[in-house]
Image (cartoon, rainbow, N blue to C red):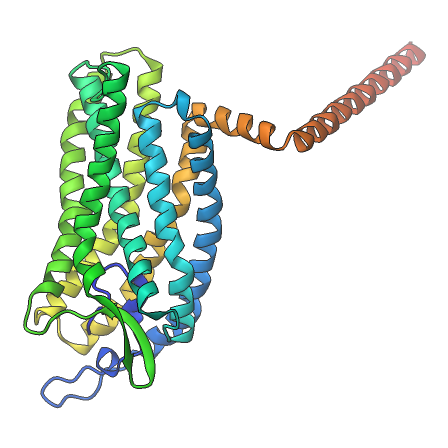
Length: 367
């Protein structure tokens, strides 16, 4: 089975547009049927993508709005979180197109949009990885080496270095995404239009794409983060600053959630690499990999919805900024809510007062 969009077009693990994808034939063996996986994906994936898009767009849009609105108060961590939200929004932009593609089994948006949507997905994925690495390295320098930040020189120098670091992360994301972005194209096949990477024959680009994902998407960031936090956590035990501990807690939660949600997908991707290179070629392995990819897709896609929730529950500063932004944007709604809350409070006090009076009267009568 060939994972046509290599590793990132998640729903194409059930790429039922192509007979070779679902008809395994080795030494004239009987075809390997994946009809159950195909039917499941055609119904399940568009629904999932739609839900993730709605929830993720609202949450990440709110994060981006708040951090841009109060950017004059932002520190390095806030700017990384802003870029992280932008990465998630880029990723989410592609989901309606993939939802339609999965439901209709037909790409109708043309070659330009095929490359554009592919680019947004890839840049969003690698952007999330690299900005988490940047946040980790910044916290490592702040805490372990007792500097204010990687960018804590004079204000102008600090701003310039921060912009340079962000540009570098986006450039790295672009470079990591380029192979798939270049080879992705719309193609007419059996009266159907598809959007997938068309790798040159007799090359190793497909294997490279699998290996690149595993290295840049899991092994490299995990190695850096394990090293940094193995130094950060012992140092925190000797600190009494609640502010620093809360910042570290937020970043650690983001990183842990990222790896919990994306590691299964990386593992299954590695198994697809083995399958493509001639290992795990049995029909049973093919069916199991198809079905496994459906479930790890579900886990991985849901990650886009969680970052804003983590900000809200872990970041006290962010909660205050959200409330302030909503008050300024919707003052009428907040005034009505405040009046309703006051009215309910007054009614509750009045009821309690009358209840207290009745109780007192009853006691007096008993006496």
